[in-house]
Amino acid sequence: MSTCATSKREEIPSLYEELQEVPDSRDDQGKRHPLAAMLALACVALLCGYQNPHAISEWVDNYGKRYLKRFHFTRDDPPGQATWYRVLGSIDWSALEARVTRWARRVLEMLDTHSTLQGVAIDGKTLRGSKKQDADETHLLSAVAHQLGITLAQIAVADKTNEIGAMLDLLSELVVEGHVFTTDALLTQRDLAREILDREGDYVFIVKRNQPQLYEDIEFLFEPPLPLLRGESWPTAETVDIGHGRIERRRLQTSTMLNEYVNWPGVEQVFQLERRVVEKKTGEVTTQTIYGITSLSEDEADAEQLLAFVRHHWHIENKSHWVRDVIFDEDRSQVRQGRLPHVMATLRNVVISLLRAHGINRIAKARRRFAARPDEAIALVGIPA
Image (cartoon, rainbow, N blue to C red; front, side, top):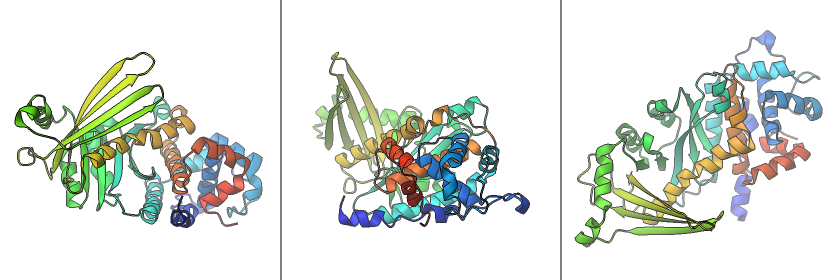
C-alpha cells in the first residue's frame, strides 16, 4: 500500500461520531443506556465475531464491562439481553441507515482518487432466516462501491419483484454524478436509465428477455455470421482465469451500430459477453452468452473497461453478500422483532465497510484477531482512547 493510501486510511471519518447523530426514539425515562454507545459497542462485538443481540450481550458481560466508561455509558452495569433486543429492535432504521449512508459517502470521497470511472453495483438480497420467521420486508436493495466494496446505501422492499419501484428511492440516497451504475437484468429499465442520466451519471446494464425487443436487437447484431458478412471487426477484450479447478474465459465485444436504432435513453454502446468455463478434472465445458447496454461512449469506456464493470458488478456477491452470509452468518439469523433484522443487516454492512475502508480484506482473519485484541476493534470504530 502506498504512503498516500496509508495516510488516507488513517483519516477515515469516525463511525462513532456518526452514530451519535442517530435519533433516539425512547422516552427520557427509558434511556438508561446511551443509544450511540450501544450501537458502537454492538459494532465492536460484531468485529470480534459475535453475530446477534444475544451474543453481543454475552460479549459485553464477559469482556466489555471494563470498556463501558470509554463508550460513555452512564451506569456500571451493561445493558441486559432483553434491553439489547428491545433497543435495537425499536431504532428508527431509516434514520440509522441515513447516518451510515452519510458516513460511507464521506469515506468514499476521501479514498476515491477519481483516476478511473467509479462503479456502483445495485443488487438485492433476502434475509432468509428472518423471512422464515415472518419478519416484515426482509428483502434489501443495496448499493456497493465496486473497487472498495463499501456499502453506500440500503433500503428495504417487500420482495425482489419490488426492486424496480424502490430503485429510484435508493438513487435519491446516493451521489449519482460521476458514477457508473451496474445492475442485473431485472433493473434494466428506461425510467432508471433516464434518472441516472438526468443526474449526470452513467449506466452499464445487463439485457435479458424482460426487455424483449432490445434483447432481440442486440442478439441479432452479434449473431454469426452477420458480423463476418458485414466485414465488421468488433472492439474486443478477453480475460482468462485459472483457479479452483477450472479455466474461465470471458470475451466481450462492443458495437455502436444500434445507437440510432434502439429506443433507449442515452445508449452509446451495446455489448456481447461470452463466458466459457472448462472443468479441469472432468473436461466438462459450459458456455453462457450475455448482452448489455451502456451510456458510456467508446472514448469513455472501451471493451476492456466494460468487461471490468460487468465483472466488478458480480463481485458484489463476494465482497458483500457472501461475507454477510458466510462470515457473519446472516442467512441463519432468525431475528424478527420490529426493525431488528434491518438494524442488524445495517450494522453488518457498516462493519464490513469499516474493515474495507481500512484496507482489511481478509475479514474472517481480522475478526479472530479482534476477538483477542478488542482494543484494536474499539479504535477502528473511532472510540477515543
